[in-house]
Length: 315
Image (cartoon, rainbow, N blue to C red):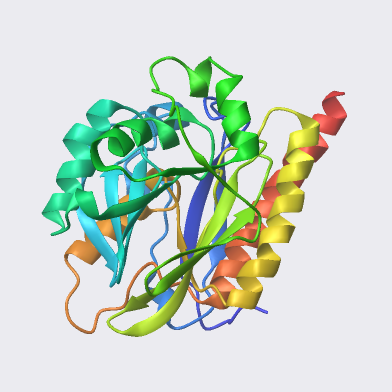
């Protein structure tokens, strides 16, 4: 039961159908802890995107200032898509790699340096799924800094057997990778990221659980690996099953914070700005509490269930 004393909402948008389809679903999850009472609402009026289509938001290349979100987790990217940088005691893990070589040269690498890190210390490039806006700069970074590219075998195959839309020629494909598997712990130094297989958005997408601290206080971050709903009924059913499966891991890990690769979908554009202006004692807007995270995931389940019903009716 969500706390009646907490009324502020965390909103997220799921792009319906494929990554390039237009319908957008608004997900609102009531935050369930005192921490989550500070999370804003990501509706269209707040984000300034009322008349902008989801496709336009996805393709928005407006850079976002590289931002420290937790003591060991940083965002680098644009309004449409970005990467997350995990700092460990033994080097850096880059989660997702945006779209193109230009993104690497103009956003990712300069962003890493601006945050005070050396790109040569990237030890892994972890790609959550096989769409071009997540892997596009991975090979460039691998070639220049030597970090291995990690991706599931299913999405490696998916990426290499699709060459249009989200896997079109504008997105450079990696030519080498190392497989990641369900339940694997990617450990580097003092940090272990849990990798969970969550097919649906793509056949081999993965979601992540990342341990972080905020001014020394421990938290667990959940990153759902594939935002948009697929076109086919069968894939939506997989998506729903994956939400239930991932929830077992997030519940066990006591996940209480949420991130995504697409800032426009979960109020991150505003939340990152809040963090850049954060004063001592201010709450972290990414910490939404365990119940808040469960409610966020439950709303996603509702939207996928609604889409399944729609697709069944259209058969």
